[in-house]
Image (cartoon, rainbow, N blue to C red; front, top):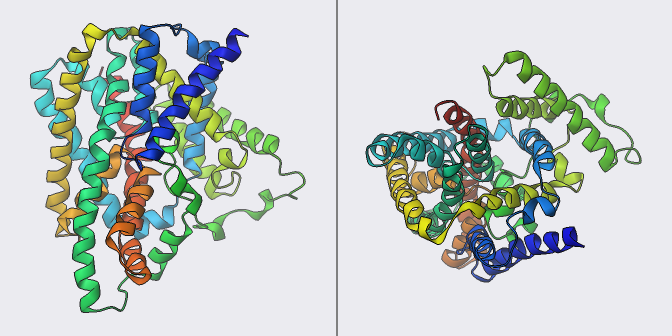
Length: 418
C-alpha cells in the first residue's frame, strides 16, 4: 500500500506540472511546477524517501541511465546534422560561449564546486542534471546536489520566452523576404524534415518528459543499414527490442570498463547506440517503440527531484543567487558566440541566437515554441509553411546537437574536474 501511495504522489506531482504547462502553452515549464510541489511536499507531509518507495531507487536508476543514453544514439540523424551543419556549428558555439563566460566570471564570484556543479545542466537538460547529481553524490559532495537540480528547473524559465521573442523577430524578417518574392526559397529536404516531425508532439508542452529526445528520426543512412536485422513483425516484440538494447548497453559498459575511465561510460553508451542504430541493429527511437521510454524518463525525473529533500527554506536564497547569476552569464556568452558566427554562416542574429538557445530546453520545446510562433506570425497557410520550412530544421538540429550530445560530453568532463 505504501509503495502505491508513493507512486501516486510522485506521478501526481509530475502530472500537475504537465497540466500547468499545457494550460500556459509551455511558457511555464512543467519541471518548475513539479519541483515546487516536491519542495512543498518535503517541507510538509511527504516522506523524504517517497521516490525510492515508488520503485525509482538506485537499481532502477543504474539501468535507466545507461539504456537511455543508448536510446539517445538511436535518435541521431547524421545526414540531417551534416546538411544543417551551420545551425549545428552555431548551436555548439553557443554552448562554448556559455561555458567560457559562466566558468570564467562565475568562478570569480562563487566557489569552484558551485560553478562546476551548476554549469553542465545549463548547456543541456535532464541527463546532464542527472549526471552531475550522481557524480556529486559519488564524490561525497552532497551539499551541492541541489545546484544542478535548481539549474535544470530555473534556466528554462528564461529560455522559452527569450526564444519565442527571437523567433518572432526572425519571422518578421522572413515575411518581408517572402512578400518580396513569394516563391519559397528553401531546400526540399529541409521542408521534408520540418513536416516529418511527428505532429502529435505538439501536445507535449515542455522539455521535462522528453527534453533528451532530439529529432523525430528520419530514414537517414538507411541505405547503409544491414537489412538482415529485420525480422517478422510477429517476433519484433517489445521484449525483443529491450533485449537488443540490453545487449548494446552491456557491450558499451564492458568496453568502458576496459578503458578504465579514459572515456566516460556514458559517452561510450551514446556512441554504441549511434553505431547500433546506423547498422540497423536498433530501431529509430527504440525505447519509445518498446513502450517504456516515458516510464524511464519519469523515473529519472523523479530521482533528480528527490535531491530536493535536502533543501531547506533558509537555503533557497543561497542556491538561487548563484544559479540566476550563472544563467545570465551563460545566456550572454551564448548570445555573443552566436552573434559572431551569424553573418559568416548566413544567419540573422535572431535565428543564430534562437538556435543556440535550444541548449536551454531541447526537444520537444524547440518544436512547440517554433510552431506557436508560426501560428501567431503567419496569416496564411503558405506563410506558415514558409516560416516553418526556414526555422524548424535549424531549431531541431540545434537542440539535438546541444542537449543530446554536447551536454553529455560536458557533464562527463566536468565530473572529472570537480
